[in-house]
Length: 318
Image (tube, rainbow, N blue to C red):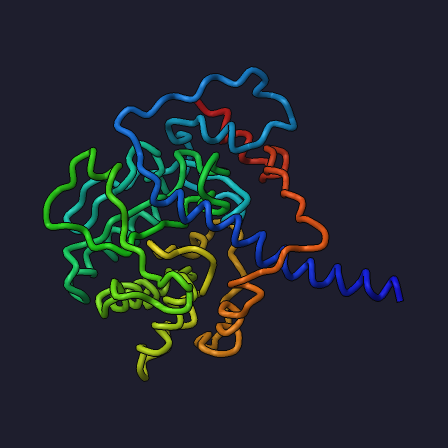
């Protein structure tokens, strides 16, 4: 009997840890996405023991200020890898502007740069938006980040604000200071008055692009899109509910063709996702998790040895 009770407690704790742990992990990412930047970013101090095998890889990649001068390659998986030969998305384009320049995260694989430029040009034709505001992409050499994301490591992820690009060129201060609009009600059950048909059209346009592997949105946004999609639903399966993402949607593209060292994510299910799998996100276990019997143990940060071996040479480049 005691063993059975322990088992039940463990199972309940496991559910809580998954729900609470993920929400605690993602919540800082959501908040971080809207944290104000600075016009005077400070360089990180040199590492005392950069060769220490226990040193978190984020401390190494977070200090890389320029891309590795190598052939462009997305190395590893979206949440465990690095980026060679990165290119920077220009901070201003005809239909896009990059935000939070102080973070130096407007780097990506050339495939993602090409997608963003093409998609941004499409946005004014499918909505009333003049263009898009682009948030975090990747660091100059990819890899784990010191703050804000578990993925975005191989140059194939980009955050796009759920706020249209203004008609004027934003000043450096505006890019560091302004916030995107929150789309979700306080109780987390639905979208709020900020959500419009333009948001729907913009996300649909991105999801309809074959190169896009999936798009992460807040579950309340997914629910609204399920209700508003109508009969054209062939793209909706790519829109995936996930914690956070109140202020932006997260676009992930597929691995570059022929790049065998890049690992694609498992394909999304073919169904539109407007079923019981969506209901889960509005359950008490997710929205109001109870404290666990056994507190969750924080996961240790990735070290360089836990990344693909090629990431060491990416870091060693001048």
